[in-house]
Image (cartoon, rainbow, N blue to C red; front, side):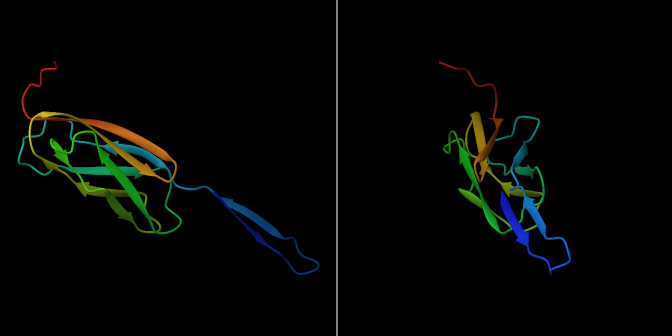
Amino acid sequence: MSAYYYPAADDQLSLFCTVEAAEVHSIIAPKARIAPGTSPVYTVNFTEATVGNSALALESSDPSTLAIPASVPVPAGSTSVTFEAKALKSGNVTITATLGTTSKSATTAVGGVVLSE
């Protein structure tokens, strides 16, 4: 959160306002299983427009199954960003997106049926 104080002239009211930092609201992942060798697109939505330029940090629980960029630039005023992943082999992967101090996760299934050990 940022706070701003705008002092006024002698006979006027001063203004004080706060601006909440945008947070990750949701990650929109493909609803169906994705095939290895494809490049699905993900969308990350924010709670509100971003105030300044920043970067969205991304993490894949298994980069050997689904490769994603480590970060995506977020221009000022953005309410969402998209990024492209690369499906490499079958498996279940959790993607985590972090903006500031908040994170959200989404799970993606790559390939055919995956059996756990």
